[in-house]
Figure 1 (tube, chains in turn cyan, orange):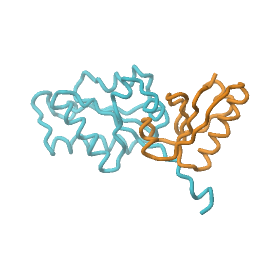
Figure 2 (figure 1 turned 90 degrees about the vertical axis):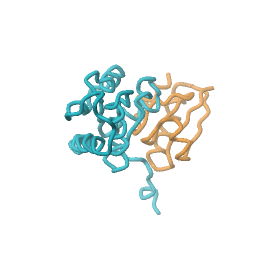
Figure 3 (figure 1 turned 90 degrees about the horizontal axis):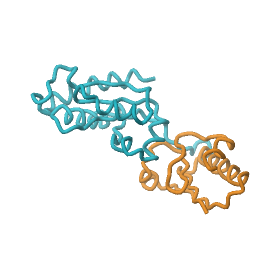
Figure 4 (figure 1 turned 135 degrees about the horizontal axis):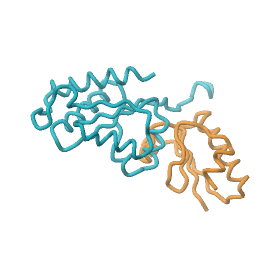
Length: 127
Length: 77
């Protein structure tokens, strides 16, 4: 195998950050991100690594092909976390915008799938 | 002596990053130790998902690209 053929540099992935908050909609955001990763739409990455400014996570995020932030509610913690870290170019979605109320929406398969579908569409729009 | 670690599985980009890093360190007159990290589990332990990457004394300075020697000099200075 030639050196060119043996290149193992990883292609830049599309990264998914979920608020993973304590509320039910936070759980849905978290589980939707994990489902999107299982489905191959992107790769869930560590939101707290951004909050903690962990260098490897920061630099990987800077080099990502695209970023999707999934928030559970209108507090938009994931979005604010990314912005505080200096990231401005990312897709954003909110579980409560999908007709699921905070405190009244258990993390069922149906609700997770609904959020994941929205996330998949957002990720697909990233070139 | 700073520890410079090149994260990557050994492809041409990884080698180029190592070359440029050494050139930058030498241009700055830095006495350094260079280490190549090729095991994917070790690479992921740095939180890095895109290679090649450069780590200086435990801090990831760049991932997913090969900066110029001048840019690397700024990172190492």
